[in-house]
Length: 287
Image 1 (cartoon, rainbow, N blue to C red):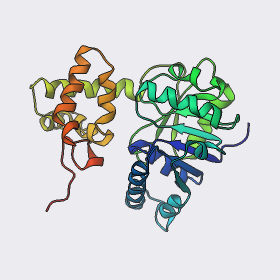
Image 2: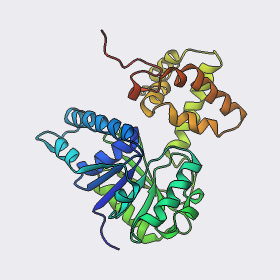
Image 3: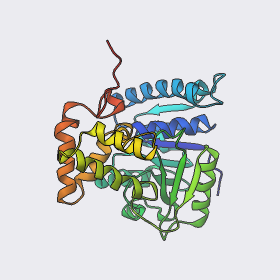
Image 4: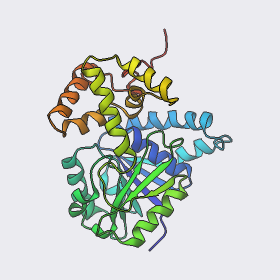
């Protein structure tokens, strides 16, 4: 198997942009893809912010290293061009099964046979997608946490069809981009991180949506009582509310009611989290 040197990241949302930037920061050539010029423009803005963030928060990012990382990323709006010479494709499309399945059907005929496909899906199993990839032996999940430069885990989870050499290659790649690889020994929706995090966030939403306590007070209780740096609603804002909304929308009746609460009170009002300047908290500069 050839070494991974050229990486394509598909989907320039909050986490997709971080994956692309961290990979470039670690010395890889990166092609970053999204479906529209508007999405690509938002990605350019995110990369500019990430340069500043890395300079402030990453110890070795001074001396121009963060700016050099930005220079290793090529933004494109053509899927075929994005993956034409990729050794690894990391998919960070919206957390909707049908969107991801349709994307892999296109990728199957566009990417070289050697290319490894990895999904960053938060909750879907790779088995839900492998039949659409055209290469189930070269497909697996590679899941990152938000604020990738600080919370640097990378959960690697294959299927029964994943070639062990491909699994090992992704473990090595995760280490090469500064992550701590977490091998998943069996498929599990939610991996390790979201198996713990999603029920926690849902419990917080249930408290607020049910009128038991305000979001800020829920956060205060959690932070004071446990010493945690962030409360659940601060985590919601960091993730962005669209991803939890999509997950809840595909759950049971109660989960869907929480999704409706998020949509009516926050998403429909443009309160999407840190990326939009407001979510459960305001991140807009004071006048």
